[in-house]
Amino acid sequence: MNDRWSTYGGINGDNANVTLNEPEVSPGLWLINPAEEGPFRASGAPAVTASANLNAVTQTFDPSMTSSTGDMWSNFNGLSSTPFDAVYLAPGASATITVSVTPTDPPGTPISGTLYVDDYTLGTPFVSGLIESDELAAIPYSYSISHENGF
Image 1 (cartoon, rainbow, N blue to C red):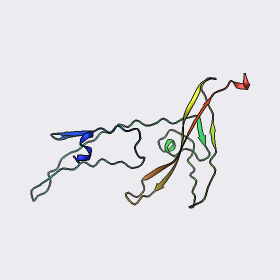
Image 2: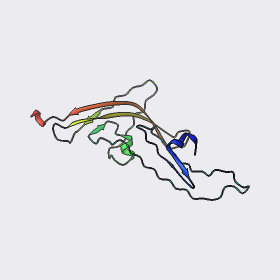
Image 3: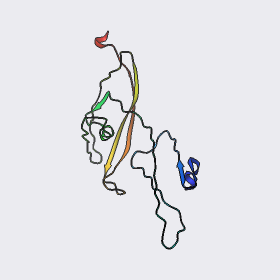
Image 4: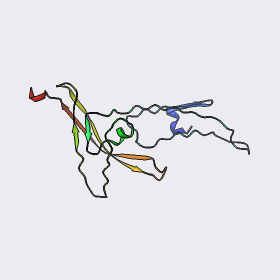
């Protein structure tokens, strides 16, 4: 295991573990590439079987928020039936994305969160056809649900 990761896990015989507990990690492609370490005989490395498990805890999607473009991540993960309709911009161009809030919590409930604006790239040079994205803006919001008809 690379020394960089040694503080996050360890190797015990044929088993290795890595635990990464960070408040934020980059979105995009993450790979697990198990590999044997040599030296090997002239016939090469022996055949082996490798398996890996990954658990990730992510932020939840706020179902009360919708936008004129839809949400790429909730759509791609099957959490939204709203179609994703990306806005394509040339350098220096701008666009307006309308965001609607339809709260379902009881009146008086305080709500807060962060509205993220992301970009994405298809067909990256690393692996064609996979999605990578960047977070362009993180807009905090908070509101309290008022009584219907102002009562």
